[in-house]
Image (tube, rainbow, N blue to C red; front, side, top):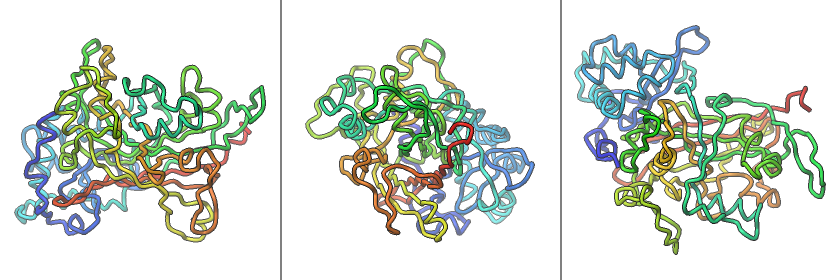
Length: 448
């Protein structure tokens, strides 16, 4: 593990407070201990997108701050990189620059900053309610992994009752190449996908709109510095290449998937939409929430050498709390709140972030700044921790019952799905990843 990104320092001090009151409110996602990045502009404006940092209910405009002269050295260079419409330039500066900027911002926002400093920084703040967000990076490539053994087992029981978990699962961090062009930011609305579906009992497929549309509760990891083609990334160096984490919803058409996934895996069932939260939380901010890698009880699998190290075993996991909620069209019309149907944690993942990067590059594959890695659906060991409707409803056999009496086996048109993520434990200040929201539209008319 990278010592720079995992070691606790003064930016994690739970007693630290900001001079900005909203950053000190109980339950905020964005205290001074967090400082995540996004790309933003003022709503309904023609402004260029640029990098911002969340603090309380505000966005700190990084290019504006860079012009103030308050930052120096690597921190100033990193802030200047934020003048671009995507974070790629900042991402590729590397972990030393990311840390310098985080620490520089911390000193400017802490309650002991001078009145002059506070006034200068305040001039670069914009209320989050007044901005709109873009994709954090130009995403050249997107790889989605399958890191939850509980999800893999639950889904395997539905598709292959005689062999739920395939023999390679405990050896290989399995992944597939996703579609970067259809990735959207929170608030994304997309049409119900159409494709080939094999009806129950039929011998020939039909072309139709998916009737088994699902969500997938995931985290996304953005690559910062890449690696040269032909040069694998060692396990204990892998997290130096990760810029940060966001929430990710990998929408899935289960009926299309069931017909097409053999022999090459997901295609049209997955490439129609993927939704990200706007905020990217740094690996350094997540340092207090590390845990030993925990495999299921009785699992004695020994990872191959390139996927195995003492530091990964001791601190490779992260306790990121995750929720997924549903708000149907009827609930929206009635003004009802989101109904939370799942609560789990990333700590249950079978494979760590470092193992994902190490395996992705072990054959010489070159990752680049802005590449996105998905964790795959993050389910826990109990039924209420299932991160997909396919699992929660046992393949559609046991509907989710909502407070207004509506039921769902799979998503219907107009449904809104919301993901939340945060970290919290005794002796720390809660930090959050914000929200990731998306809405299902009816299938495009020409495709019905």
